[in-house]
Amino acid sequence: MPKLSKEKEQYKLISSNYQLRNIKSNLILKIIFNYISERKKLETIKYNESIQKRINININNYKTFSEKFSSIVIEIIPMKNIYDKFIYIEEEDDEKYYHIYFNDKKKKEIKRTSLNENDKVSKINIIINYQVESFSNLFKDCKCIESINFKIFYRNNITDMYCMFKGCSSLKELNLNNFNTDNVTDMSCMFRECSSLKKLNLNNFNTTNVTNMSCMFQECSSFKKLNLNNFDTNKVTNMSYMFKKCSSLKKLNINDFNTNNLIDMSEMFTECSSLEELDLDNFNTSNVIFISWIFFKCSSLKKLNLNNFNTSNVTDMCGMFSECSSLEELNINNFNTNKVVNMMYMFNGCSSLKDINLNNFDTSNVKQMSSMFNGCSSLKELNLNNFDTSNVSLMGGMFFGCSSLKELNLNNFNIDNLIDMNGMFGGCLDELKLKIKSKYKNFKKECFKNNIY
Image (tube, rainbow, N blue to C red; front, side, top):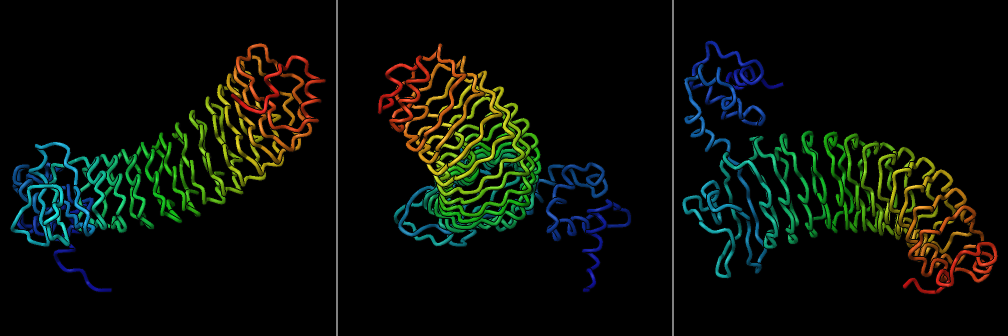
């Protein structure tokens, strides 16, 4: 094993123990700034007054050094023949903290943020000073960018990455190996609509402090697999729309997600149309309230493990499994539905579903059941004997298109408060309609119409 240089040994000593005695001031500065690979140590001087005193440096002097050593350096490769903005600077006052150079010409600073037709630019270098603490919208809708490489990113004062790369629809390569996300709290919409990006390495991401991941990968339609095993999601409360319209995604590893504080999962996997199986057995959903449309249009999904789903606080299950057309079986015996008020479209379009057990469902607070089983064309029997429908006002199209259904138990159905029952049994077998007309006299003519409206 190679021996560490004297300076590296001293740097190690400083960064771990702060034992500064017998080390000269100028040497300390040299050590800290030359061996900056341990990026978390960069802010040591700024936040440690004792070190400032020992090396006789005040905060203003620190800023001078920080300007050189704590800046973030980004290299951008633009698309050919696309002339658009390449960075988004929200406030005019902040422009002084961004230094832009074309084609490695560091001496000539560019004072604009978009490319013109006459520009002959093969590379854009951007240096961002330490004063910037938010990367919100940094490259939002920058459609002219093909590649982004964060060459230097040592400091950890960035807290906001909302919409950072949103709408970078031409982006094919994104190097985040030097990324520092230690104090980031908001990653919502971060990679949204990066539709040309086929792979993304997030192995170094520290998500310990993140609370919002909503829409984070929404419409990343070229991803085929995504490994997020290293993500610490303990503080995350919002994952709504997180993978929505990741239409090429076939493999998603989120087995280590900690969802103890999660509240919103609405549309989390909506239109992940290539995903064939999803294991959420490890998910703790005890605090989740919003879960509507979570698997909507997951049309290739054949295996779905929700064995440990705790739905005791969920109020809205609208469209939850809607158009999961490949799902043949679904075990939701553990579901607690006593707070749910909306079950509209819940199993709508589950055309391969052959059997479903809803004996545990408490529907006493449900008000809407329209199209709940619409298009469940493989179901042959359905027992809803336990359903309390006394508060339900909408049942239009509830069993519409259940073309294989022969047995339907509605013995305890209370339809006194119904406002809409149009097409409730439309598209069902004639023999089933006759049974219902014979057995349940309170269903009106509009229930049997072959249209919902």
